[in-house]
Length: 304
Ligand SMILES: Nc1nc2c(ncn2[C@@H]2O[C@H](COP(=O)(O)OP(=O)(O)OP(=O)(O)O)[C@@H](O)[C@H]2O)c(=O)[nH]1
Ligand SMILES: [Mg+2]
Ligand SMILES: [Zn+2]
Image 1: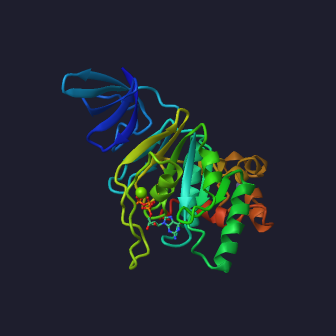
Image 2: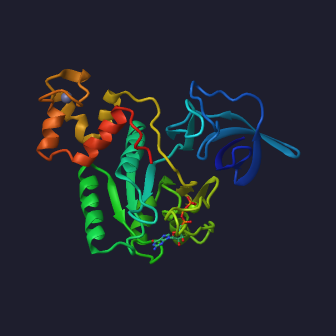
């Protein structure tokens, strides 16, 4: 039988096949095609399962359309897959409780772009910021929209902007990701009565979430629409990308860099008169985006 993985605990998996849910384990060796992953089977994977009395097993992962991959924090050299076969990657971000850095946002966008997965940036908790911070969020919205990212400002708690969010989900499989405590599960609970995820408090000491959701899980909202709730991510490490590749995944740098007088090998870091650096000076490329690029290209740690 062929089915879709809807929940991954790392040791067993829910697989939806022919309208039924099967709890499966991995039996035998599964082909991994070169990637060292901490979790070989991801939510969204299409798998072949064998169903026997009392024991169901995943025998094969069918080829993936794409996947969202990040460098795992614990084991260096290992990467972990958030989800596979998605139509869009939605990052839930907040300016406070907790704070999501621009470096983290840009790393997420670059990773999605590297698999040509369309990106949506949702700023949640817009009921919290004061007028100044609200202006900052509106400015971020304009900046990210200018480079082709869909941006929403919402409050899951106050039910503000939820209809717009639902419209974005419609007809697609969406990955929902972000730091712990940004309100991923609260938001998903708002959009469908079939979703009843546990939500957690923000620590008043650290202003961070408490890692309430522990497994990735896919929910079907209707026949064509699914969402994947995921555990909060602490850091986003890029997986094996050269500076040239990274600059290709910045849409505002991608076209421009072909005009650089230093050619395709230019790293846009210290080369005087480089077309990318001129664009930054002119304000055509946002300084914060360029800084994110530099940190990624130089392998600096701006993962959090
Ligand atoms: N003020 C405010 N609080 C919110 C909003 N959305 C969620 N929260 C609160 O933020 C806290 C964390 O929400 P969760 O939905 O558990 O966050 P999560 O992103 O699923 O976190 P993890 O499962 O740990 O990754 C809860 O106390 C929510 O009530 C919002 O729009 N405004
Ligand atoms: Mg959650
Ligand atoms: Zn250059």
